[in-house]
Length: 297
Length: 297
Image: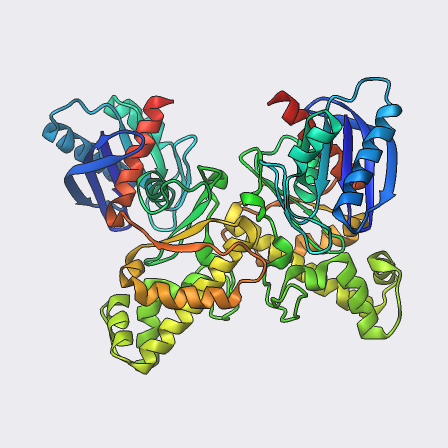
């Protein structure tokens, strides 16, 4: 099948083979994400056609994932802050246009599904998969199913953890305002006046003992630990899987986060902290799993 | 069947008839809850025998609910702060002793199940049922099922909402430290030096315009609204059902809580606020529903 991941700036696609337990992406294609709906639909069709042409087998289904509020049951893109649709029935329109079943899902929840079926959360019944990049979101694995809450679930990046910094969402104290990759870079620059190439450079500065970097990192870790504590209190996950760009920091992130969480936890079940296994590909792989599930349903 | 609700001081039982959609409690019995396990098991057997004797039909199953950490899948009482068991297999032991299938579940989740099947959350797929009494807990209805998280889910009373008051659980800022019925009474007395007969009396004082009562009530409403905001952010419930003693305050609670929640909500789905429909009986009724589900499984 073909899997497509619609991003804010780029739309990536891959030819994927496999089963509902495990899939592999083989050939890739990408385009800039158009700023209007009709050109976007054209790009989606072009990507599918390009990969269809490159496939040895017939493409029997397409899985597409996107950010924002997504109703995956009905395959509707409900709302996004930056992309050109509102209440648009992607599954229905593209199934008609492409001539094969099209599943439409949420990027974070689909990536979480892939981590649950074949990645770092494999075999668990209850877990939260938490990608940390420009923002922070969460895919909730509850009793073996990814929970969507009508498209509204999992916004762990916007839980108030008390640091008092205003967030672009209109709230105050949101986890992602100090703990996303983007926030870490921005806050280091705000503190020092020095531009950095993302959170990865701040991570390098932490390793080098830069005091400002250590302070910014410490605040990020504290906010993440407090967010994870809320997850433990409400959902009792067996594990929290850290993904996205910030998880590339590995133990520089995980070790202080383990310590901070140990310091905060009271009666809650202490979730194990794990690093995501599938990296950037989780989005496609999840999109392909949605397509397989649609075919099997 | 016979339904039993093990409480901290009293254990209540009822003869219950009905179906998996709706049950009615008919005859009641109660005993003080013993402080040791063997006497407790004797009391449970006595209550069941007493109600069996009063029943016109054969008792075909027993449902028992209890507080603390409960693994309802295996019928195990995992942990409680104040009751005499730890990792005790109630279902297995009592099924053997009583000669009928015994379901063992969690009091708050069972009461939530009853509100979902036949009360204020009937017909919803996603809701939180939040009893507010000595403490505050939550039963999470997610995709039509009550979610237990291995027995750890739903501790909304222990989410930090930033008021800074220490909680008996060892954390700070917990919702229930300022918003439970017990906390409202305690905080009014601490502020004024005047003893009150529970949160109900504080509610009367609020109606009479007592400034200290208004201040304490306002703080409780703010903490509850902030707790509900976290639920909306992570789970996107269609409704939050307020139960327990504090819900008897009705609009005195709901109206300011609606206003405060409107002031806090950003991009989240705004949950409808409802009052619980089943009152004190929700615990039994849920226990009976668990017993019916066990028979049907």
